[in-house]
Amino acid sequence: MESQPTVRRSSAANVGLVSVIIPTFNRAPIVGDAIESVLRQRYSHVEIIVVDDGSTDDTRAFVTQFGATVRYVYQENAGVSAARNAGLRLATGEFIAFLDSDDSWVPWKIEAEVAALRVHPAAVVAWTDMSAVDADGAVVHERFLRKMYGAYGAVDIESLMPTDATLSDLIAEAPSHLAAAPVRVGNLSAHILLGNLLHTSTVMIRRSCLDLISAFNLDWGNGGEDYEFYTRLCALGSAVLIDAPAARYRVGSVDQLTAPKNMLHIAQRNLATLRARLSDADAGRFDALAPSAVRQRLAWSLGWLGSAELEVGHRVAAARHLSASLGLWPRVDRRLLLLACCLPSTALLTRTRDLYHSLSIAQNTTRGAVK
Image (tube, rainbow, N blue to C red; front, top):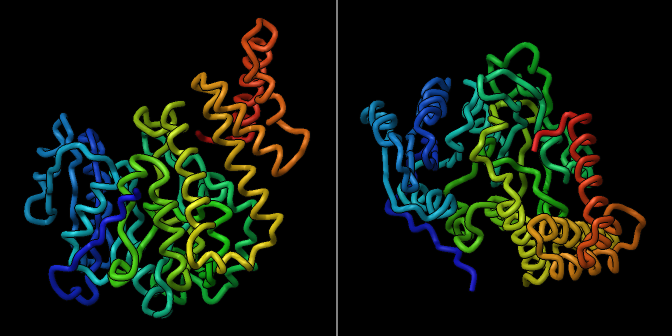
């Protein structure tokens, strides 16, 4: 049974206040960068809630040095969903913004998103583009959102969310090189099914939305919980994309969820989210999508899961999901090679798999992909 806890309000929302929720685990050396980026915001009516998810390093000392400016909460390790939900229970602001403890914001981020949600009262969420930075803070990809989230290849965001204004229309002191950046408005309730489009550290939502949907699903654990949440959130109303990078997303960290076992979990939860939404009572909202698009999306999710299972040696399960993927969307592509690798190991098949893996890495490196 899915665990989707309701977030209960302890009091009426503080109008205009932005509650910033920062979950963290063993990131003592860098969590301060995230906090400081909030303190540098031009919009100063904020509360900062750091939820320490059972850290065993010096996280407490690094956070509490900020004093009463930051509310520090410790909990036994329970995962990022539980940490964010703990923050949501404490939040008192009219708006909620999430910030992962290894990411940071540019100074105009909150100001622009509050303005966007004020201008568009029917919108339930606003989000921005982001830049990818390395461990030293150097920008490696100026606009990383569309590179990180493959769903932008399936969703024509420019048509789905036409330009409504520019960044300079929202805030008076927009950076000159971003002043003309589009502010896009539209409804994602159907197209979010084609894949995630929102990165959590770029998002701001209305606290009132939490009265209508459950919080982060505890069963999703560490990986895929954000996408599952957004598929439910975006069903409530329209969305606003400020098409300019306002977050700095750290890449290359050793604790990011890129290990094969974690990727398997994420792939499993991606498919589970897809199936859950398609079986929802309100699944009629997906009528806007062509049946072939839904079929291809299911096939892609099954293929991803099969690939992840093969990576950890689960050949039988991998073969089952890859076969199902090819049955839904028959094509001569990498899934056939992966399916062949599911057969009992031989020197030839092992060599073929290793060669394909090497070619994949080379291809991704050439494209500048960051995993």
